[in-house]
Amino acid sequence: MTIVTAEPVAEPVVVGGKSMTRVWALVRQLLMSVLTLVLISFIAFAAMNRSGEQIARNALGINVTDEQLQSFITVQGLDRPLMVRYFDWLVHYVQGDWGTTLISKVPIKPLVLPAFAHTAELALISLAWSIPVAIALGVFMARKGGIFDRAAFVVMTVLAALPEFVIGLGLMILLAVQVRWLPVSSSAVSGEVSVAWFLGFVLPALTLGLSVVPYVSRIARAAVSEALNAPFTRNAVLRGLPRRLVVWRHATRSAAVPLVHAVALVIISLLGGAIIVENVFGFPGLGRLLVQSITQGDTNSALSITVLLGAVFIALSFVADIFVTYLNPRLKADR
Image (tube, rainbow, N blue to C red):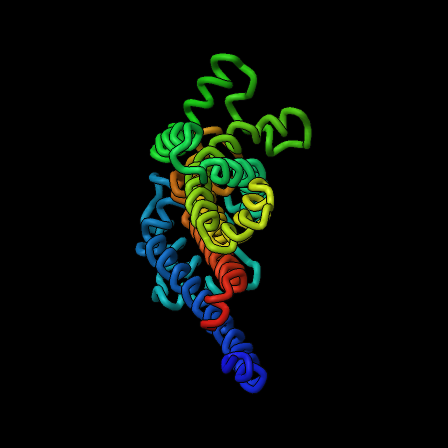
């Protein structure tokens, strides 16, 4: 009784204060994200621009005279201090001027953005089938001790231990080489939309999705199992609600917070896994372009791609943290 009478007096002030606290927390987190991205860009720039002479040799080739080498270093400004070159590059990068490739002198931005679009499409297709399957598996596995739970848990554990390239090679041998249902290479993705374009996504999307399912299904299993043992779900069962309704409407809703956080982590790791998968299948995405740039010594392209990936990682982490905070009443109250 005393708690109820105290609420109307305190709530208007507390709510306003908490709202301002949440706003400042978001602003602080946004600033930290920007600073983190700047730090990532500086580390990447410093690692790829340690030696102006090496950059010049990568651009001009092996058979180059000392005069040509020195002329290139002077023209490109590679003899300037590292911090000066970094801030000059950063200003141009933020303005959308990503420069040209080191060897072929082709503008970098028109090369990177289509590759990024292909990687984003691959990630969305992978998530579109793997997340629902993983959540459904986790819900069915929530009945711990059953035959399905034991069998699925063993399969998910084995699958989680396999690297992406092993899963990809296994699927390639089975579906592309043995039964020949799918193409070995995904190069058709860079062309117009067609049957070949669609088939080019299948093997990479299967590979990435199979790397997602074990983690999300285990998180869903633990979260739903905990929700089923909570007092509110037990009360719902005692009130006569069907178990299926309790599981899918109440327990899964209560498990939304850890699932959202798990999906956010999966999306971030998915982009990292795409670098491997794209090179296994020859998929024309950002990961393959990054490896090609590093192999060819094209530090300009590699730097632009690295910073873009860093920006995507940080943005996804920021958005995921907002979702998790506002889905979880306890975290919302803390802020």
